[in-house]
Length: 421
Image 1 (cartoon, rainbow, N blue to C red):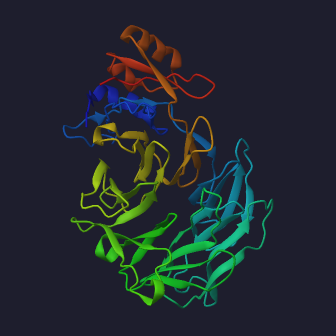
Image 2: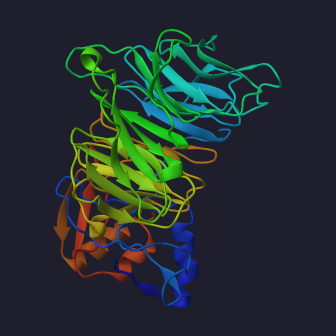
Image 3: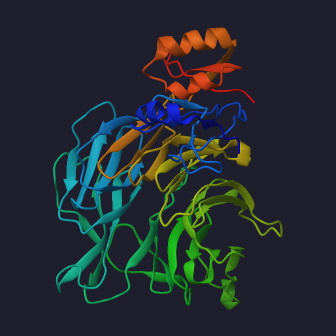
């Protein structure tokens, strides 16, 4: 990691520039390796203020005044989100500013999933949450609902139970097939059930030590066994063929540091995860003796979310959002934004061009557009460009006038600069 200390006389000026949330953009298409510099308000090796040499204009607040938004999901036309404190599920059409409240009275909805027709969510269902009655931790609504409606309950529990639903997953095939399954983790089990009705659950794995996050692809279900610091997988249909032996559960990874994964994401070949130490890993899905590849590190965190696009991995950690190419290295890590309050639910919008990245903070839905192309400038031209671009860029860029790139985004050209290696 490359760090630059700023003199004390500049610290206050830079704090003004950074205070609104400083976004950093990397060349994701060409996977340039630009230096990564933390912005931690002075918590550096030698004191002073660490300045991010690749910062650009802050992210855009799409919606503000929300009541602790938590989960986030996207499709071609809309952005879906939940409010943990407000107990709502909402939809915002892209390009609009007024969301539609789809469901109210939900108990801290914390996870959203989409298929072609429905939006699904998982709510908290700890003992006593429903005041002694039933709780409804899994429900769904048709996406087309333009006003608040009664959700279809897909799971109900006696509220005196102490084992909540901890994870929810579905898989949408891309080859024309259909699948009508949800995958859940609860009380030592990984299970599957129909998407269109209550109950009728069946076991995929039992005797698991605190299973939590779950993900699925065309053939397997993957989950985190927190109590054993492991990531495992099993076939979606683990039944033994012709009365033979059922397939064994595979362990993808066990942490030697005794920390568990906070979130999982899958592409065609790999499993990605973010762990409690703020590290992002990648490992082949198939049985492979090779160890997991650590892609990046950040501060330890008790919460975080992870998302993939075709080329990049995005995650939230503490007060920052980060991006790096999927096949990148520690040196290619980019801080997208700082000074964010409890960022979570990060999602890469792969439907739009240019691609955007969304996340939620304690009160807002936030959007950022990473660079779609870059060109290099000579130092003198770069400084003139920075002056013209102010206040969209931050003062610290002027500390590195050696070689700069101009970032262009989408149809309109937005100027920023970053220091070359």
